[in-house]
Image 1 (tube, one colour):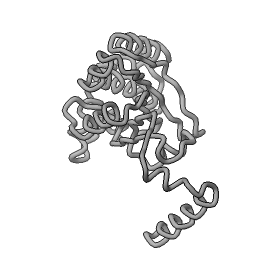
Image 2 (cartoon, rainbow, N blue to C red):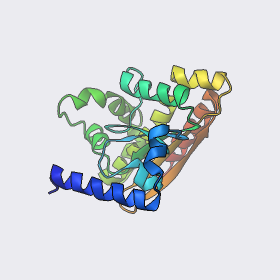
Image 3 (cartoon, rainbow, N blue to C red):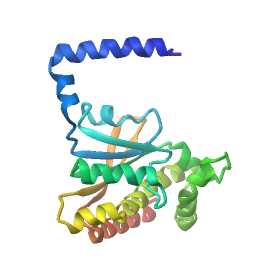
Image 4 (cartoon, one colour):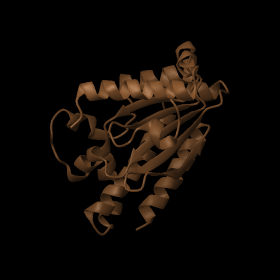
Length: 217
């Protein structure tokens, strides 16, 4: 098991290596950040946004929480979205889920584990709405994977309905929302076919994605 001292040593090694590759790297980072992407992902330690996208620090603004949610009442995620869109002027917001998500599995099984139960209310509601499609699948593993995918679609739709994103679109700001899912088993990202630059387009693309997922076995 790593200790904090080991993490500090790793940090110093990394910093030396970065300076060896680019002596101006940290001075540029300190001067400003100009990311083109906001990444809304899961808190799972196996899904580090920078690493799986091959981006360096400063290129992606990141918000993570259990099950990559964008609930309407969450001031944390909405504050991040506002800063990313209005101050940083990101051009892309990516909602990225992942297969094997523990939060989604808890919602699928209707497990009660504590405070996170409240946080997962929306995922349980999604499960209830899609229960017939989930029941048509052969086993829990497949159901879990499908609910992870459907949850991404749901969160992109939630994102497209936030006041900040709608204001940006109304003002003509170039901003596109996306839905991706990550497979920990092979390290690959999959595009769920949602790329939208308006609320209407987001609704259309999310409905189409949901249709594909609930029809497929």
